[in-house]
Image 1 (cartoon, rainbow, N blue to C red):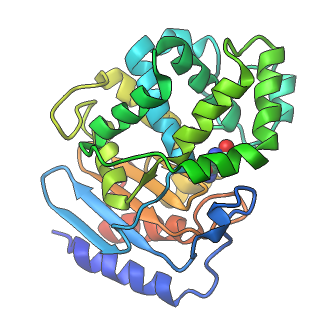
Image 2 (cartoon, rainbow, N blue to C red):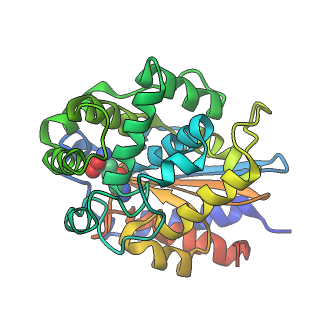
Length: 305
Ligand code: DON
């Protein structure tokens, strides 16, 4: 039996000693203010024990990690067929905000985790829900079994001010008739979903259902096993953009990153692990988070492969 606490402690110690911690993103000015010396991990074992180190209880901006939760809500509301008419499920091999492929492929995003794909999911939710932002936030709170989770309105406003590339993506989608609602309304939802703040524990809890065949912490079932299989497959192949192959190769788990420096990954039936370290590598994924998770699956010998 593994000493998980000891493994996490050793990973934290190594991370703290590393001088090259990556770079916080500057294109969302509010995120540029975050101290990149933060480091935390929360490990949630399905059999009941939890382990944590460092800043696991400090909230951070979940950013693109929210795209898994919005996809889950869209699957829950609509099922896969309608969604798959409007986007693909192939890795893009390109950065998360890359636009050229979207034009070449006539407004059909490669997958729901690049920005254009997540913007289409936001559009789908707006068409389906009466009060989209409130209902999405409630969905996330229910998944995490925590009613204190909230948007960070400064972060949402900060991204709305400087989100030129997302405006370009949404306008391109609209020009190809792949947005039903107004660009401004869709992006307002998208920027708010990305601005949700959680700590490592809340995020691990919110992802519990992806490791537990669709049943979340409060025992309510939101997704079928087949939907969970599909979402985990998209996390594995597309969760890290043009570094998805590297994450599968080094870590061997489905997972998702965000430019807030969070990474959440899971082994179905066994655990969910969240790491937060705000400095990013050149591909926009947490630099020390990637290394930490590689070290965790190597030391524990737990991965899907
Ligand atoms: O749309 C954006 O650029 C951000 N709100 C989210 C990007 C992101 O988190 C990419 N992940 N590593």
